[in-house]
Picture (tube, rainbow, N blue to C red):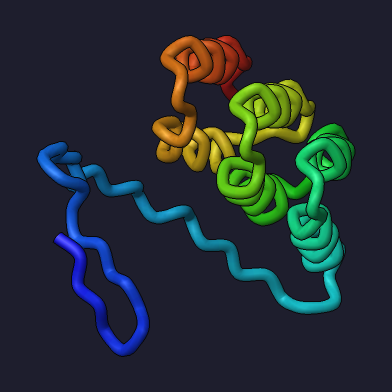
Length: 141
């Protein structure tokens, strides 16, 4: 059915094909950081990298952040996870960045929880399995 409203065309439905609309994505964990701290600078860097218009440039810039051994777990790492899973379009890039972060010596349980809670942002079952395997292989403190 198509309805015209004030020069705009609004399409309702798509013929006889029915699609499911009941899948809800879980909310991303929220991170609060005081301004002027090392974490706030890193978060600003992540946001700037996420705004780059080319996927490869976003991946490269975010990957450099994910590799830093002094990355704050509860703030910067969680923000990086949220950003990577929402701003990287290619599954291989999302997977690569998350695996890089998991391998980071500063990686921590708070970040692991953020990844587990958003595992459905990976489309491929093999990607989900790789991420869960990498998380489960990390030594627990």
